[in-house]
Each structure stands twice: as C-alpha cells, then as structure tokens.
Amino acid sequence: MQELPIPNGLFWFGGLPSTLRYEGNYLHEYRLNMASTHQLVDQIIGIRQAYLYGPRTEFGALGARFTPQKNGLLSIQVVASDDKISNGGAGLSENFALAVFHEVIEMTEQIDALGSGILRFDHALQHPVDSDLAIFRTLARSIMYLWGAATFSPETITAKIQLAREEVSRHIQETAKVRL
Image (cartoon, rainbow, N blue to C red; front, side):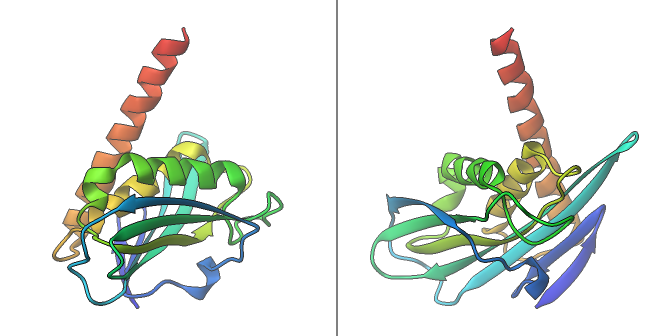
C-alpha cells in the first residue's frame, strides 16, 4: 500500500488501511454489460478528506477495489453497514452507501475505462456529526475520476477531487432550485 498526503487528507493506492474495512449488512449491486477488461491486476484506491467550513468539519473516507474478470460484465457493489457506527468508525450507513452507489452508476463514462470485473466499495470511515451526503458523493466521484489516471501525483489527485466537489456542489444547487 502506498499513501500520499494531499491537501486536507490522504490518498491510498495499491492497498487500503485495515481500519477502513467493514462488514456490511446490505449489498447494493448494479451490473452493466462491459467490454472485457484491459487490466489484468486488481486496482485499489481510497481517499480520506476533512474540510473546515467555519465551525463545521466535513469528514469522510472511502475506498474501493476493482477486480478484473473476463465475463463481459461490470458489477458495481457498495456495501452498507448498519446505522450504529461508532464515532469516526469504519462503516458506511445506508444513506451514505446509496449516495455512493448512485454517484458511481451516474458516472458510466468513467466506469467504461475499467472494463469487465467487480468494483467493490467496502472500505469507509464516517462520523455521526461531521459526515454528510456531499462528502461521500464527492469521494465516490473522485475515486471514479482517478481509476483512469496513469500516475498519481498530489496535483492530479487534488485537481480530480476539486472537479468532483464542484460537480456535486453544482448538482446540490440545481436540486435546491427545483425544490423552490
């Protein structure tokens, strides 16, 4: 496992800290027909971020593994744990798991770079107060952008996370306008 410090967090590739691993009670799964994979080895990446917004902190960590298969299908799996996650503990509650699940499915253009196999999100940290849907949507979108990266530099990672944050913020604002 390699760990890179990035602004406001950490980026992992080639492995994930065992403290992020959790067993889930629910599995959300979606399957897409996909061309055979170009990759022959597992890929593992994860991101931990914490942002200060005045007196409030937004915190979350999310990691995933892509295991290539030659069956012509991409299986997107997001594991949800129960809602009783300890303070800053490993797990992904149902509402955050669904946010990750829908965000990943929405990004079919980036998923296409993966090819056939299993993309499984089962590493996460959440905080009962400082985690929200926006941070997990941003983490999911950031991870999807980074699957296709040839190299991981702090600049590339930061740019992809910033792009994901802007897209999630724009979507939240558009949704708020529709509700008015």
